[in-house]
Image (cartoon, rainbow, N blue to C red):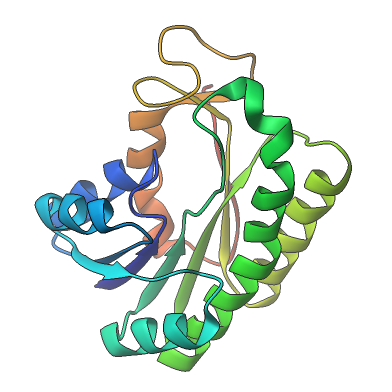
Length: 193
Protein backbone atom coordinates (compact mmCIF):
# COMPACT_ATOMS: atom_id res chain seq x y z
CA UNK A 1 0.00 0.00 0.00
CA UNK A 2 1.19 3.54 -0.72
CA UNK A 3 0.91 5.72 2.40
CA UNK A 4 1.45 9.46 2.63
CA UNK A 5 2.34 10.19 6.27
CA UNK A 6 2.06 13.82 7.38
CA UNK A 7 3.89 14.33 10.64
CA UNK A 8 6.42 11.63 9.84
CA UNK A 9 9.18 13.19 11.96
CA UNK A 10 7.01 13.64 15.05
CA UNK A 11 7.19 11.49 18.16
CA UNK A 12 4.84 8.84 16.77
CA UNK A 13 5.68 9.38 13.09
CA UNK A 14 9.31 8.31 13.52
CA UNK A 15 8.04 5.07 15.03
CA UNK A 16 5.36 4.50 12.40
CA UNK A 17 7.63 4.90 9.38
CA UNK A 18 9.85 1.86 10.11
CA UNK A 19 6.82 -0.24 11.10
CA UNK A 20 5.02 0.62 7.87
CA UNK A 21 8.12 0.01 5.76
CA UNK A 22 8.78 -3.32 7.51
CA UNK A 23 5.19 -4.32 6.72
CA UNK A 24 5.92 -3.79 3.01
CA UNK A 25 4.26 -0.42 2.50
CA UNK A 26 5.70 2.38 0.38
CA UNK A 27 5.78 5.47 2.58
CA UNK A 28 6.13 9.13 1.70
CA UNK A 29 6.99 10.99 4.88
CA UNK A 30 6.22 14.68 5.06
CA UNK A 31 8.42 17.10 6.96
CA UNK A 32 9.02 20.85 6.98
CA UNK A 33 12.70 20.69 7.90
CA UNK A 34 15.85 19.84 5.93
CA UNK A 35 17.01 17.64 8.83
CA UNK A 36 13.74 15.72 8.57
CA UNK A 37 14.50 14.82 4.96
CA UNK A 38 17.66 12.93 5.94
CA UNK A 39 15.96 11.27 8.91
CA UNK A 40 13.06 10.03 6.78
CA UNK A 41 15.38 8.69 4.11
CA UNK A 42 17.31 6.82 6.84
CA UNK A 43 14.03 5.36 8.13
CA UNK A 44 13.15 4.02 4.68
CA UNK A 45 10.56 6.60 3.58
CA UNK A 46 10.49 8.81 0.53
CA UNK A 47 10.97 12.27 2.07
CA UNK A 48 8.57 15.03 1.05
CA UNK A 49 9.44 18.52 2.24
CA UNK A 50 6.22 20.47 2.47
CA UNK A 51 4.17 22.71 4.77
CA UNK A 52 0.59 21.63 5.49
CA UNK A 53 -0.50 25.29 5.28
CA UNK A 54 0.66 25.64 1.66
CA UNK A 55 -2.35 23.95 0.07
CA UNK A 56 -1.06 24.21 -3.51
CA UNK A 57 2.29 22.59 -2.71
CA UNK A 58 0.65 20.02 -0.44
CA UNK A 59 -1.86 18.99 -3.10
CA UNK A 60 0.92 18.64 -5.70
CA UNK A 61 3.04 16.55 -3.30
CA UNK A 62 0.23 14.18 -2.36
CA UNK A 63 -1.01 13.82 -5.94
CA UNK A 64 2.56 13.18 -7.16
CA UNK A 65 2.99 10.32 -4.67
CA UNK A 66 -0.42 8.82 -5.46
CA UNK A 67 -1.22 7.27 -2.08
CA UNK A 68 -3.95 4.80 -1.25
CA UNK A 69 -3.91 6.17 2.31
CA UNK A 70 -3.18 9.58 3.80
CA UNK A 71 -2.25 9.47 7.48
CA UNK A 72 -2.40 12.67 9.54
CA UNK A 73 -0.08 12.55 12.55
CA UNK A 74 0.63 16.30 12.63
CA UNK A 75 0.75 18.30 15.83
CA UNK A 76 2.31 21.63 16.75
CA UNK A 77 3.52 21.09 20.29
CA UNK A 78 6.54 22.35 22.27
CA UNK A 79 9.46 20.32 23.57
CA UNK A 80 8.58 21.21 27.18
CA UNK A 81 5.21 20.20 28.62
CA UNK A 82 5.10 23.47 30.61
CA UNK A 83 4.84 25.39 27.31
CA UNK A 84 1.72 23.57 26.06
CA UNK A 85 -0.71 26.40 26.90
CA UNK A 86 1.23 28.78 24.62
CA UNK A 87 1.13 26.25 21.76
CA UNK A 88 -2.58 25.44 21.93
CA UNK A 89 -3.58 28.01 19.26
CA UNK A 90 -0.99 26.60 16.83
CA UNK A 91 -2.05 23.02 17.56
CA UNK A 92 -5.71 23.98 17.09
CA UNK A 93 -4.78 25.47 13.73
CA UNK A 94 -3.21 22.14 12.69
CA UNK A 95 -6.44 20.37 13.68
CA UNK A 96 -8.61 22.78 11.72
CA UNK A 97 -6.71 24.12 8.73
CA UNK A 98 -4.14 21.32 8.51
CA UNK A 99 -6.84 18.66 8.51
CA UNK A 100 -8.90 20.52 5.92
CA UNK A 101 -5.84 20.87 3.65
CA UNK A 102 -4.84 17.22 4.02
CA UNK A 103 -8.38 16.08 3.24
CA UNK A 104 -8.42 18.31 0.14
CA UNK A 105 -5.06 16.91 -1.01
CA UNK A 106 -6.16 13.32 -0.33
CA UNK A 107 -9.31 13.79 -2.43
CA UNK A 108 -7.28 15.35 -5.25
CA UNK A 109 -4.95 12.33 -5.19
CA UNK A 110 -7.81 9.84 -5.20
CA UNK A 111 -6.74 8.35 -1.85
CA UNK A 112 -9.33 5.91 -0.56
CA UNK A 113 -8.38 6.02 3.14
CA UNK A 114 -7.75 8.87 5.55
CA UNK A 115 -6.51 8.24 9.09
CA UNK A 116 -6.01 11.04 11.62
CA UNK A 117 -4.54 11.35 15.10
CA UNK A 118 -6.71 12.74 17.88
CA UNK A 119 -6.80 12.59 21.69
CA UNK A 120 -8.85 10.52 24.11
CA UNK A 121 -8.66 13.09 26.91
CA UNK A 122 -10.58 16.34 27.19
CA UNK A 123 -8.98 19.64 26.22
CA UNK A 124 -10.21 23.02 27.43
CA UNK A 125 -11.98 25.77 25.54
CA UNK A 126 -10.97 26.35 21.91
CA UNK A 127 -8.55 23.40 21.93
CA UNK A 128 -11.45 21.07 22.72
CA UNK A 129 -13.59 22.70 20.03
CA UNK A 130 -10.75 22.25 17.53
CA UNK A 131 -10.57 18.52 18.35
CA UNK A 132 -14.32 18.17 17.77
CA UNK A 133 -14.13 20.01 14.43
CA UNK A 134 -11.09 17.96 13.37
CA UNK A 135 -12.78 14.66 14.18
CA UNK A 136 -16.02 15.71 12.47
CA UNK A 137 -14.15 16.59 9.25
CA UNK A 138 -12.37 13.22 9.22
CA UNK A 139 -15.49 11.18 9.98
CA UNK A 140 -17.63 13.15 7.51
CA UNK A 141 -15.06 12.23 4.85
CA UNK A 142 -15.36 8.53 5.72
CA UNK A 143 -12.04 8.50 7.55
CA UNK A 144 -10.72 6.97 10.73
CA UNK A 145 -9.95 8.91 13.91
CA UNK A 146 -7.42 7.42 16.32
CA UNK A 147 -7.87 8.81 19.83
CA UNK A 148 -4.60 8.31 21.66
CA UNK A 149 -4.11 8.54 25.39
CA UNK A 150 -1.27 10.74 26.62
CA UNK A 151 2.01 9.42 25.27
CA UNK A 152 4.83 8.39 27.58
CA UNK A 153 8.26 6.91 26.93
CA UNK A 154 11.36 8.04 25.01
CA UNK A 155 10.97 11.34 23.18
CA UNK A 156 7.66 12.25 24.85
CA UNK A 157 6.77 14.76 27.57
CA UNK A 158 6.86 11.86 30.03
CA UNK A 159 10.14 10.09 29.32
CA UNK A 160 10.66 8.66 32.79
CA UNK A 161 7.27 8.75 34.49
CA UNK A 162 3.72 8.11 33.42
CA UNK A 163 1.02 10.76 32.98
CA UNK A 164 -2.39 10.30 34.47
CA UNK A 165 -4.79 8.10 32.47
CA UNK A 166 -5.79 7.84 29.75
CA UNK A 167 -2.27 7.12 28.57
CA UNK A 168 -0.31 4.85 26.27
CA UNK A 169 3.37 3.98 25.86
CA UNK A 170 4.58 5.58 22.61
CA UNK A 171 5.98 2.42 20.96
CA UNK A 172 2.80 0.53 21.82
CA UNK A 173 0.75 3.40 20.37
CA UNK A 174 2.65 3.14 17.08
CA UNK A 175 2.16 -0.65 16.87
CA UNK A 176 -1.53 -0.29 17.69
CA UNK A 177 -1.96 2.27 14.89
CA UNK A 178 -1.24 -0.26 12.13
CA UNK A 179 -4.63 -2.04 12.27
CA UNK A 180 -6.28 1.27 11.31
CA UNK A 181 -5.01 0.64 7.78
CA UNK A 182 -7.73 -1.99 7.38
CA UNK A 183 -10.38 -0.62 9.76
CA UNK A 184 -13.76 0.75 8.68
CA UNK A 185 -14.56 4.43 9.09
CA UNK A 186 -15.01 5.37 12.73
CA UNK A 187 -13.14 6.00 15.95
CA UNK A 188 -10.35 3.81 17.38
CA UNK A 189 -9.21 4.39 20.96
CA UNK A 190 -5.56 3.61 21.77
CA UNK A 191 -4.97 3.64 25.52
CA UNK A 192 -3.53 1.38 28.19
CA UNK A 193 -6.06 -1.10 29.45
